[in-house]
Each structure stands twice: as structure tokens, then as C-alpha cells.
Image (tube, rainbow, N blue to C red; front, side, top):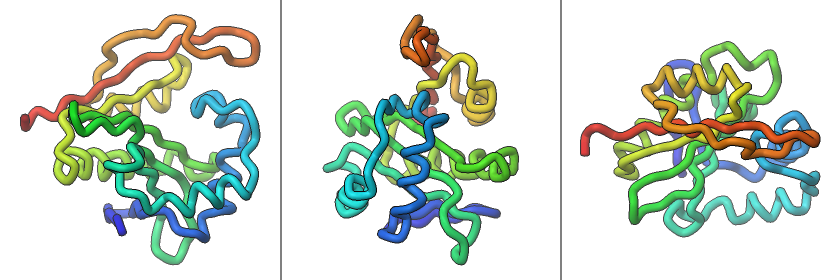
Length: 177
């Protein structure tokens, strides 16, 4: 089981008791824009997902971890490695913190720092990337803080509420290789 501890948070592998938390996040319509979701998820589908969450990142090509403030409290967010490509040593990164009260508390920043360290040192990745809507200033600032660089704009990339929106591609190269 993966558990990475920071000063104020830890990120851990998903557990069966994360069902309601993941169900709530996946069905929060405000999040659908960033997750490219179009329809609600049933508890049955989320339960099936959790039953397969034990798969190795090399098999699943994804690693989703829960962000927690301490061991006695439930998850407050999720952080993912997706499109894991061991041949080219790269993966995408996504992060979501649930609830306005949990944002702007350095939770996302600490979780991203832990995930970057894990990806570069444990998985030996050469690069990480993030796809961010051009209007998402908080995410752009978060990834920039860790050295991610904006390397391009994908014009009219996402259809949101009937209009197309641009998306920027941020990339972080592991300089140790």
C-alpha cells in the first residue's frame, strides 16, 4: 500500500471506505469540466472501480491516491497519475480538493510535491504533464510553483456548456536524467 507523508497531509492508496467520497466528487457537476465527465456515476460503478484500485500502476496505467489531513479524518481530495507510459517515462497529473473550505490551505500544494517526488524517485519518470483550462488560475499557479512550464495552448479543446474553451499543457522535466 502506498502512503506518502508530508508535514500536514498524507496521500494514500484508495480504500473501500472511500466509496462515498469518490461518489460525491465524481458526481459534482462543477468538477465535470476538468474531468471530461458527461454523466453521473452510480455507486455500483464507483464500487467496481475501487475493487480494481489495487492494480499496479504498470497494469492499470493510472494511480489514484486519496489526500488526507491525518489518519483519523477521511479524504479531502484526490491526486492522480494517468496515462502512465513506462516506455517513455511520463504520466499526466490531476488533482482535486473537495470543498471550498479545504482549498487555499496548502493541501494541494503539499500533495503535488509528494506526488512529484514519488513519480521521479520511485517510478523513475522523466516527465510529468498537466492539462489545465486557461481560466483555472489556481491550478496554473499551483503547477507553476513546482516548476511546470506552459508549453502550449490547445485551442477550442473542451466543449463546456455549449462553447469551446482553450486548455494549456504544462510540463515538468526531471532534470536528474
